[in-house]
Image (cartoon, rainbow, N blue to C red; front, side):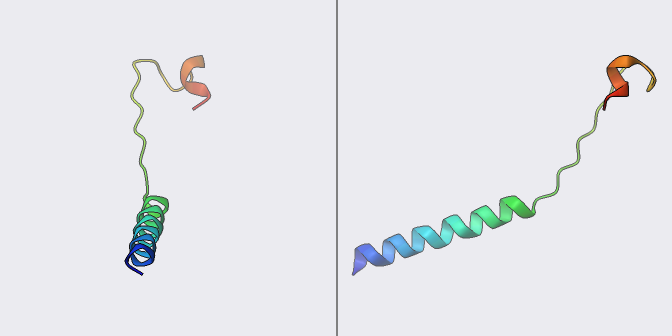
Length: 44
């Protein structure tokens, strides 16, 4: 019975940590010396 409880607790922790990772918002800031019309920056 203790083994089953440990497995359930581990599964619950993985589900919670996975849902927190999916809910995270990321902001990517890109800096470049070239103007926005430069070919290197035009595709971003």
